Picture 1 (cartoon, rainbow, N blue to C red):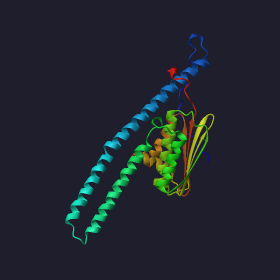
Picture 2: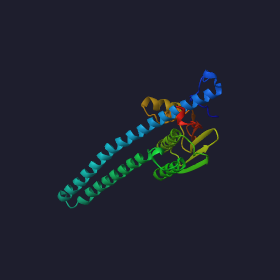
Picture 3: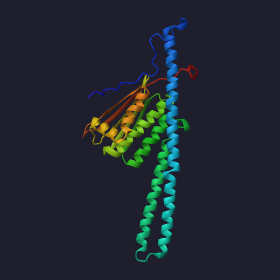
Picture 4: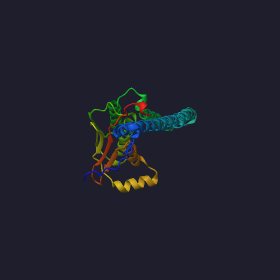
Length: 267
C-alpha cells in the first residue's frame, strides 16, 4: 500500500499578484515574500525549540537529578546506621539490598543525564547532523540491545536549524517507539538528502500495530509522541506516514522540503 502523504502547509506561499506595486515583476515580488516568510518561520521554530530544550534541561537538573542526589545520600546514611544495629546473621543480606538500591539510583541518575545531553540542540554543539544521528543510533543500540543500522546518503550540510532539530526529534521518537512497543530485534534508520527534499525512514522488524487506533488512543491519553511526529513535519511544510499492521514490520517515513532563505535581510 503506497503511503498517503499528509497535506503539507504552504511555507511562505505568496499571493499571485504580490510584488507588482511599483512595476516590479510578479515573480521577483513572490520570491522576496517567500524568503521573508521562510526567514520568519525558521526563526520562530528555532526559538520555540530552543526555549523548550532549555526549559527541559533546567527542569531535569533542578528537579529529578537533585532529588536523586538527596535520595542517594539518604540511602548511604541508612546503610551506615543499619550497619551498627543489624544482627550479624542478617547484616550481609540487608546491606546487600541497600547496595543494589544505591546502584539502581546511580544508573537512574546516569540515564537522566544522558537524556539531558541527548536533547541538546545542534545549534549548541560542534557536531554535524550525521554525527548526531550516529551517536543517537549507537546509543540506542547499546541501551536497548536492538541491532541498529544507520544509512546516510546525499547532502545534509545546508539544512536549516529547525530541519536538523526536527529530523533528530523525529528519529528519537521513532526509536523510542521501537524500544517501548515493537519487540523488534532490528531497526534501520535511513536519511537521504536530495536536491529538493530530505527523506527520513525508520523501519523495524517488530510486532506492528493498528496505526489509526493507536494514534487516536495516544491523543486521548495525552501521549503525543507519534502525533507530535506528524506535527514536526507539517510545521516545516513536510509530510509523514506511518505504515504498520499487527504482526508486520513498522515503517515511519518523513519528507521535508529543502529550502534555505536567501538572506536574513529579506525580513
